Length: 199
Image (cartoon, rainbow, N blue to C red):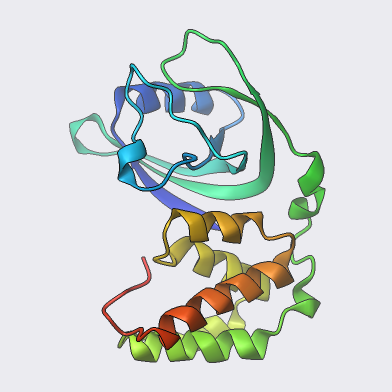
């Protein structure tokens, strides 16, 4: 999500090589989900997994070497993109040709915040946290901008791949907040409080 942060631990050799290349350049990485469902869609060297058509590019804003050759990084979202084509390269990781044309509004911080029903968002968030016996720093939540709060909740939410993709593809901030609220309300209506937690 634009301006949301995503911490990642990187250990696969192909992604370690990708990070080496990225850090020598513009520090940008495209994040995208597989087109199927579930963990069975893990990519192997012999099989190229189909990808969703829309992803989000993030900038590496934190980079730390940890034990066993692993890297701990933080990506900060910049903008969404559409996949145009896949490039043929000799790299062990996949390289895409993408278009940012439809997502120019992602570059404007806070765009559309005035249309978000923030009181309803906070009401549902409180109900979700209460149902799952979770606590939150409400002073920090009240200080946070609506954009930061919505996008951070999208990243932290425990939903599956389909729901996460729906949140990413929401046309604007208001729509994204509405999808987030709808997902939380569906879980609450189905007996939320089953131990599901924010990540």
